Length: 268
Image (spheres, rainbow, N blue to C red):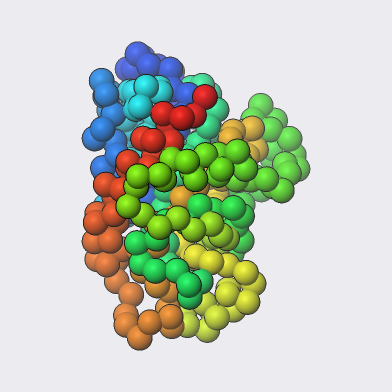
């Protein structure tokens, strides 16, 4: 199925992407800045799923961004949609076969660290996989990577350092910390958040980790950014809603888009 997807995409586009972008809830607007865009709906690509999450357009956009050839996933897939984890990472492996060597992921996350504020941007330096799923379970896809890939530097240190330069002139507070992934779709309980804080998690969400594992297996460089769109359960005395997540994502999306464009400009 990977071959069918790659052949279909290559028959429709004229760019060979080097950088892949996966955009989270409320953050898909970056795709609108891609020059000479060529878009393909997920439903038309062999092997691709349909994105049902709010704020996810559900298409691949190819073109140029800050002078770099890119492919952008405008919307992603989640375990809470009922999808198999191997299908969720299918696009990452297709990107690898198309020529992508660097993957940049954004997501909306809840702040566990009480020093964080809504609207902060966290550079992920490590993760805790609390989903109970791993895309590498089963027969190893030897064409992509080794049976037992190292996850000691799952988030490329050099890319994390570049973000510190890219954020100059951007009105967003930069943090760095650990992302914990849950399966969802229910938000976490206050007791769970207290436990996650003890474990060392700084933010929590329902995505990203499967794609990061698959990207590392493929030998890609990885950068992941969490926009803190709400404080996690129990941090503030207020209910959590998806509307808040999308609203904050839309409010800060311009700054995050600027940061990513700056980042691409200084990447070699």
